[in-house]
Length: 68
Image 1 (cartoon, rainbow, N blue to C red):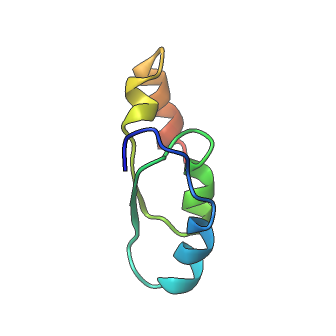
Image 2 (image 1 turned 180 degrees about the horizontal axis):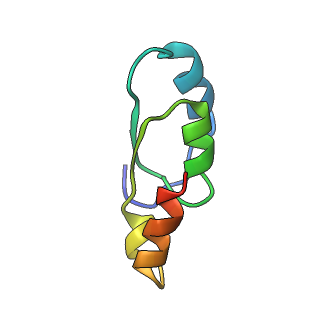
């Protein structure tokens, strides 16, 4: 999968239902639109690449993700 690909929304149900007691890391398609939903679905670690390096202000983007 290449960076910046479209996020598959079915992952939300897979996180909640399939792995309720595991630490879940998500690497891929994590951005300001998906990050909060991933955390809400049970993800405990997000790998954020394109959303930071494509941001106009990287420090502000980091702060936004830290607020989750």
